[in-house]
Length: 563
Ligand code: SF4
Ligand code: SF4
Ligand code: SF4
Ligand code: FES
Image (cartoon, rainbow, N blue to C red; front, side):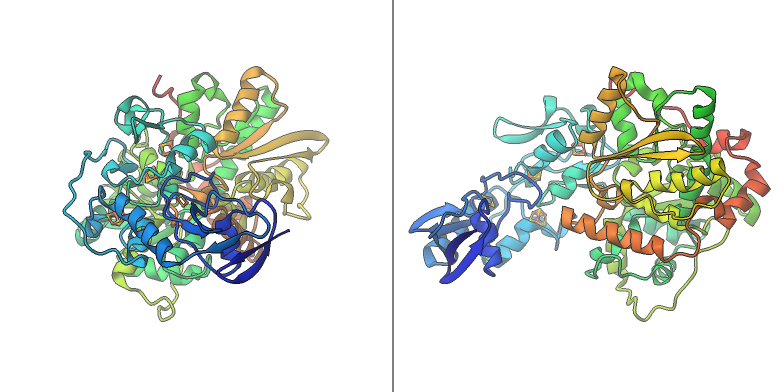
């Protein structure tokens, strides 16, 4: 341990701590902008300046040394911080009221905390980039912190962004859609300001609910409920499910369903596809296909390996196809009047819903995707008091779900849900313990071996595209030992999706994972094949997994992208 003195307080911290971390331990939070708890030290904003042994230095970059004396708020320190922040603000257009990060912006908060008020009228230097359906880049607001570049290059290994000629640019200087970007939105989570944000489409939702002709329905993804509470200033996972449904009805949704329903359905289709491949010599390893950022990645970087993907559409798209066929038919609703909104943790889902092939219902299967951040804004707009709202239940036919579906939101969840079902289908005995804990947790790669009636099945779970790349390189080299692999684009799985509330640090993601498994543990049914509404769907409409109707509505083909 190293003992230092911070503002007169003797503080003992582990060796290797930065002055910023040590000061936090002593109870002094040092303002920062380029620093992020999960990323490398950038040391470029200089907003975290402190006095160390009589010299002004940056607290995020200096490591503690025994006997160090740190002062965090002398008049000289405050003046230096203000000067450094003013330099950043001198080229930053202050259109906060017109900015998606208004009230949740690190720069805005810093300007307020350091009491900087006199702003010039600063022009936008760069046009906004609206080239993808998922994200909008507004480089006039970039503070050059470099966080997005690290996330895109080092964590996701996509390499769509670079720092060149003193600015953050796309590689090649082209619109984002023309780069290899997979629209995962991880850069939008890392960005301290409104320079990369989701493509906000709240207006489209408001127009749909105002149209008396439209039947507005929604599906909410497994990772949404645990995180939306954060966007409302509540503890992670604290918003009760049935109050949440009541809130969605107050927003104007006519019917509220759950993507969990089609998560369970995915397990029936994908589990049977795996068994078919295992028994008929199909392409192995089979890889899950529910993460659209991952699909964009494999289509872009491994176009010759697409036959490893399960042909199952994602649960979002399965829901979209069924809502305008099965549900509309059962309810006697004209499918052309159904406006299908999904609420997702993910920016890539906006891209997925807009794919031209996602129209197997005869209409665009999903009309609009809102992220958790957009939903949080809608709830805030209505100022709903969840403690006062009466509970409301999900609507039937597409609303029932099991614990297996809930865990889709966490890395390893799809694998665990599949194992719960595949085991019982193959072994034909009840699974004593449904908890496959070896595939749980935040680690980037996990593996396990499962005995299915004498056949040893090797499975792996990868989350983040950097880990997916390692898995794919092994497959390409012909050295992969696995039969079945789950890949999630975002670190931690969908709970860390690019549309989730900001901040979305590793610490926050772990809290969301805990909330997901707590919900699963408390549910009466925890295996997808026991979902009563899924079984009814097969009886009344699909008839059997992998049958003709399933292939028509629930499965898809993949195409090389950006070659
Ligand atoms: S990025 Fe922050 S400071 Fe800049 S306009 Fe948006 S809210 Fe305001
Ligand atoms: S969305 Fe993902 S792939 Fe695209 S620039 Fe951002 S981090 Fe890179
Ligand atoms: S776009 Fe955002 S994250 Fe990237 S360098 Fe600029 S301010 Fe930082
Ligand atoms: S936070 Fe230390 S230099 Fe930016």
